[in-house]
Image (cartoon, rainbow, N blue to C red):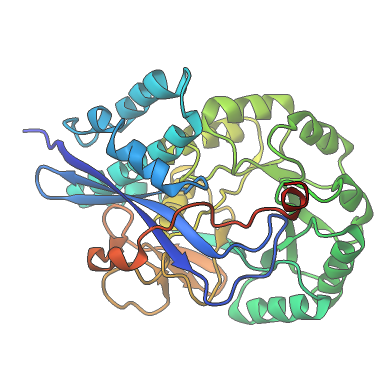
Length: 396
């Protein structure tokens, strides 16, 4: 008898910062939000997924709890591609909350893969033919925001001491301040790989940074413009000033394919909690590899996302770069979510850090466990975790 999906649930969760991170181009977030998705199979197996909050976590959770029920419950547990086909044709191809459905589908897809792997007693990457289990990492997440050059260099000193050889520095503050920080880091650490992230480039034309920072040797410039300005990505990439990265805010293989065909990206960055889950990210990865582009997936807040990202890289046959979250405290990485037992060196279930190298933990599914007794403790808060931008407060 085939095993079927018996239940589908969703839980918005919030983890507040004790100390807010340094600002980015979008401001300083007050908390980490996510939507956890739970799939229960009729043999009792439980799988967990993680959807990006989309600035409205309760709405994403409601899509899972309502519209996606009849697309998922009652299906064979391994029939994951068919779930994608139904959701795409019913909810993503016409009018409606397409973005919200893509986020909800991402969480459902990851939960289905986790459940299927656990049911079969196999890590997901093995089901997909992946063998690589060790990945070079760079320090990303909410770290290395706008601060003084001295503090930034000290932060990177500490990362290097931990074994990191690369990190993503936030730009988009002000051109002179951004350049001063980047040059201070390059002078202090000549061999450190510097990625930069403009977070949509809202403060100034970041092309001027790419032109002026030739002496810094940038590994890439991420999100120099908002998603709506694809032509600006294409024009900047054509100038060859720095490799152009993006994709965390793109949805699905079709949209990524259009960006790749237009020549907008050097580095392709799908996020498995935003773009449609692992299933869709595998399709995006195939497009990027066929075009000869680099793949460096973007991460979201929780360790389900982090583990699934490593399984994606393994399945694509890559030992390529993984965006690690090096912050000291993240309950969505190692608190509410964990392996369920202490293992030395783990930053969360399914992921172990060996210096600056991320290692897949060899456990069924994604190897992540959720402490359901603590879900109420992290009950999701309403609204966006990001502050209202100053330009709107001035005009509003």
